[in-house]
Image 1 (cartoon, rainbow, N blue to C red):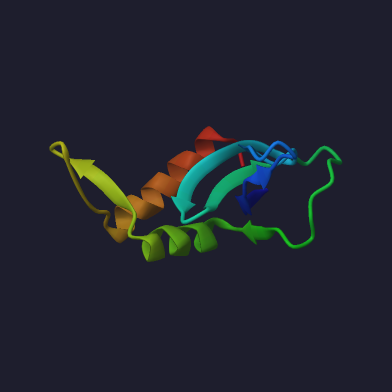
Image 2 (cartoon, rainbow, N blue to C red; image 1 turned 120 degrees about the vertical axis):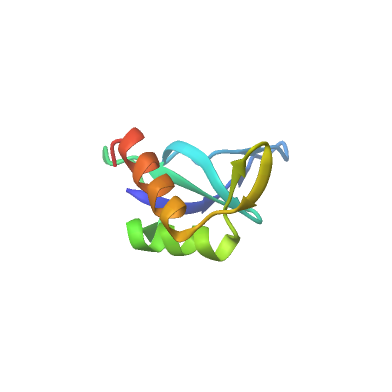
Length: 94
C-alpha cells in the first residue's frame, strides 16, 4: 500500500521512519514523504493518507517533480511523471 507519512519523533528528540513503513523516504514535499506501508498486520494509523497511482501522479505534478536533462534539472512532463511512477511501483512490487 502506497502512503504519505511523516517521520516520528523519538523521546530523545530524534526523528525516525514510522514502524509501519517498510520502504520510505520517497517524493518529499515539506515534511511529508511517500512510502510503502506494511501489510503484515502491523498497526497502521487510520489517519494515514493512502495513495493510488493516479493520486501519486497528481502529487508529483503538484510538487513540481523534476528530472535531469543533460545534467540540468527541469520540470518533468506528464509522460515522464507517469513513467517514473510506473517504474517506482514496479520496482517496489506494489
